Image (cartoon, rainbow, N blue to C red; front, top):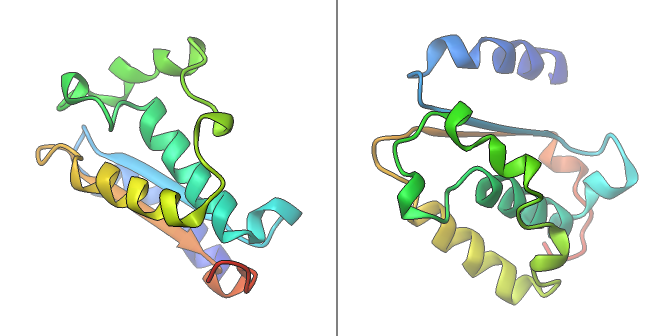
Length: 118
């Protein structure tokens, strides 16, 4: 199944509009990738670094906001450890996503997530 997901991810950019943002995770491949808390923090970090929390970046192509990575931007230390705070933050970030920019999130092997924080 993972190889099918990987093949789909490779084709995702050709299937999506040019200003789409693709996020993907292969879960269970490393020790840290089995934690729900670390997954949510990682998703928040990537979305925030690419401008999803800033209305001023709405509608920009990925190349226009990729410089955020060079500036350092937020890091995982900027996000709380508490799932009761992380989940609403992720929901708010997703709800604030620009309507003119498709966001594709692909999570492979959800069954590999640990029972912690499920």
